[in-house]
Image (cartoon, rainbow, N blue to C red; front, side, top):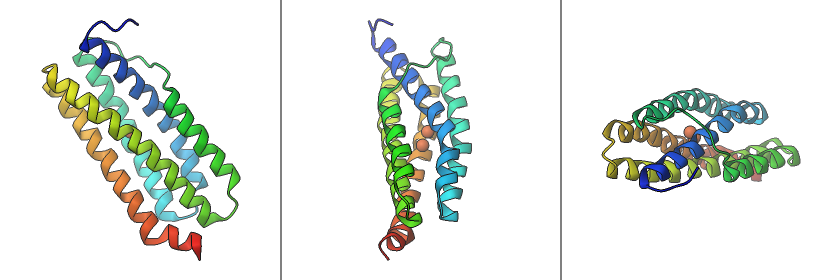
Length: 163
Ligand SMILES: [Fe+2]
Ligand SMILES: [Fe+2]
């Protein structure tokens, strides 16, 4: 699709995060399965449920822009997920594997935080208040997940991994 306006750019970026969220949704169960720490497992499972809602929110945002939901491949997210899978397969020690999983998950969250921050700023400029609000709800969930992962790493997983 040709990008001729800010509206087009917004929609293209929305399609990128729509693709990314769907990939994340598909892969979070694998990360939950690979996690040894019950808290980490639970964090991934909870975020999968949130991700399902985030996908629905994106569909509402498409609607507000008069567009049908469509994905465009996000090479960045494919790369981050490929790396996550690689490290899951490589690390034998359970606690070290959890540390690697957290590192991958936080890379994913930071990508999402960057994307949602941009989309919110653009939605505001384009006068789409409801879209901005929906994207803001998701951004808060991403930030909360990121903080939870930091807490899990610093309170336990990193200690176990270096014990
Ligand atoms: Fe997300
Ligand atoms: Fe997320």
